[in-house]
Image 1 (cartoon, rainbow, N blue to C red):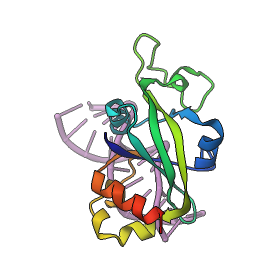
Image 2 (tube, chains in turn red, purple, brown):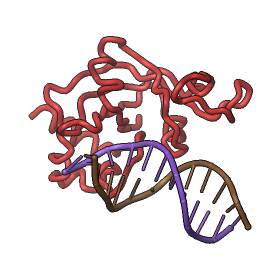
Image 3 (cartoon, protein in one colour):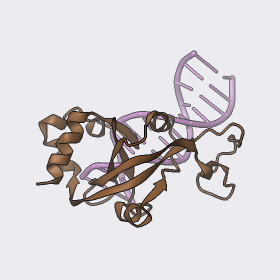
Amino acid sequence: MRYWLMKTEPDAFSIDDLKRLKKDAWSGVRNYQARNFMKEMRLGDLVLFYHSSTTPPGVAGLAKVVALAHPDETQFEKKGKYFDPKATKAKPIWHCVDVGFVKKFPRLIPLDELRGVKALKDMVLLRRGSRLSVQPVTEKEFDGIIKLSQL
DNA sequence: GCCAACGTTGGC
DNA sequence: GCCAACGTTGGC
């Protein structure tokens, strides 16, 4: 079992949206590194659900991988924001996993609070200039965040 | 294959 | 809205 963190702007898709839909495809990722991490995901992997561009930004809840990486349909939608003219059905470029709702944390854990926690000091999220929207998280980091969520 | 220009991310 | 960081594009 591995652990991950995935960022989203809650105006576009929030933990409450996932709760309502129960599960959804994590479409729209257009960064190769982030895509490659999704390809590594296995069923049941747990995902920290991160809200970005909010005041404050932070970890909002927990999701899990419910479908392995598959072609991201939005790359084929000509009128869509995520259309990629280089992609074909035979040779898709972008893939995404499906994530299922697990829980919304009783409180949002602000980014600023994560910075102060020793066990989290090496988190990808906290590295300077890390804009990666899909990131691996170590078990130690994951456990640390779960603990914080219960404070 | 270099690298300048450009676009995007995301905290502040 | 600003801007630092950094990925991508495209001319050469």
